[in-house]
Image 1 (cartoon, rainbow, N blue to C red):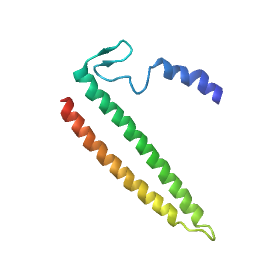
Image 2: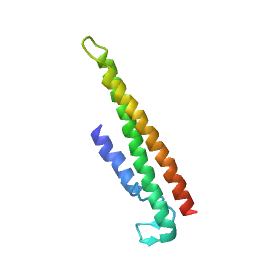
Image 3: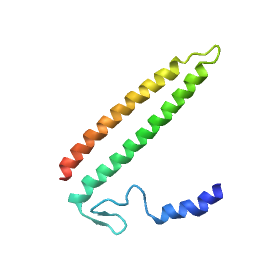
Image 4: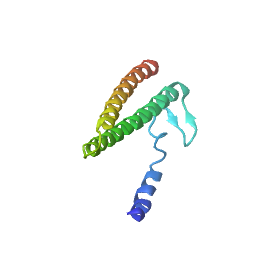
Length: 113
């Protein structure tokens, strides 16, 4: 499995270029041709989308871990309260991350025009 990943997936990802810096309008980091008026707001918006995507992934992992804690807490002698708290706070964190994403997306769209 690891050999398949290293032989097939990694070269394809490398050939497509850097993930966080590719496909941004006005920014060509490979040649250095950068239009500051267009590149900077688009790059900031792109990085913010990556950060909030990562935050959403962490939230999903925490919800799954909280579900595991609830299941393990229902065994004799256990308590599922910590799992319920973890899921509650993960959902609250996701709502805050989604709200801040929409606010930042609105601000970046207003700046970029």
